[in-house]
Image (tube, rainbow, N blue to C red):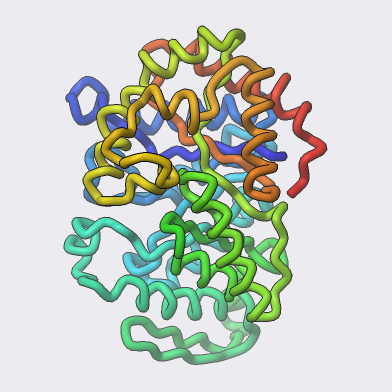
Length: 359
């Protein structure tokens, strides 16, 4: 089993006016440095344009910055929101990041899920189709040689012939193919169907095991139908993790810290308000009865190394196996030492004991 982090970032202090955007950025970079130092495998950065509580308009710049202060960790976007970019320019930036990171880059892509972002860019309800059109152009730029032209409804590319006068066009990925990734949340996730059909890496958002099982069914069916071989070791699953030396310490640091406050004040009410509380509870009880106490005991991966190993083994067995568990990064910057210790314990005690689980 591999381990990753997801820098959204959560920024309640920025909303409150007690943290600057520079401090938000610096905290994400610090978390990523710890993850690299203690042997975690992957770090992802989100793209949001209008969300004050999750400010991150440019995962490319975060990946570029992190690449200069880390050595081993894979860096990715989760995700580049394709409809909000010229796909020719985005394809070039992806290739540049592949070279800049020395091949430590995953190009996560998505249509963009927030109506306020869509309003800002004027894309209306066209995002899903714009994403597909953009991806066709990105894949062509990454993989084709010679001149070609694609004219779509929203985007186009007219790749010129190679010219010795300008020694180009010249840019290609460092690797034969940049890994592409797509995220899904709903049990019947359309984006995971697309991911399977295109041979992309699947990333499941933070949902109940019953939805995760359906995620793999949807993805693997689409992949097989398109002639791809689904591989559970490529499957990434999001699930928040906090490890401390004892169960009591871990529970306290979550219940009375940034992770617990985020779930109690934002995530749980949001899931209930959107009518998708069953994605957390698995439909075992009325969604409005969701509490942080239930989440601590039954959903979040919180505890001592022994407890966290047991919980991750149980999750792995329940869903049938996966390759990487990705924990969201949280706003523990006011008291960072327990959070640093969390990463140290994951790398030194949890990860080695789960190395035999390979998807």
